[in-house]
Image (cartoon, rainbow, N blue to C red):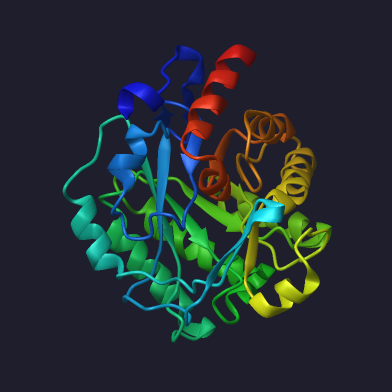
Length: 307
């Protein structure tokens, strides 16, 4: 698989946050929640893999069925609910090591039973447990599938949480990059707050975006959407909004904000669009489901041609 899917070229390398990415195409969080597949994903050509979202204690997530395909829209709806084996199990797998050239990020969240007032304890627990074994961190406060989680995106609680994590981080001999994953459903005012928070807390950047709760402009019938029910929508319908958020953040920050772009990338052209909008790296998930691993190869080849 490695010989067929991996594309290597000097122009693909990216230097960000003090890390060297072999190529700028990553696997988004949610696919490999428990660190079971990252070695295989490296063989499929990804330059980096984000494991998680992981929580301090293992939890089963929301009742099934909780993952739905919308083939007419090249989209998915999920309400997984941070199902995972818990951070200690993930640490056990990461301890076994991974390919040297692969960058692995740790996406951290809180348990469903943990009230928001105590959420910081969950995030710091995961941060400390994973610190020796991942290359960067992502703070996930934007999933729509854990009750009240998105309330943590508000300016005051988010500033407190990120400041706490940064203080822990800076106390380490070699701090690691911390990024924030945001929802596509934020208003411009909220996005302005995000820029201010990132600047104030001095985290490394933003992942834009998570799934959306919007159901606008879908080809799938409204009756089918109603039958499916709640969940985060990903895939092609998210493409335009995710790109808009990336462009807004890059422009309003005067180009200073580092952004990983994700949302509706199903072709090389989609990836190039995210990069042109201001993303330094991109991630895929739903596009991988519909297009297969050849998508990674296509994107990397197009980036070489575009270099």
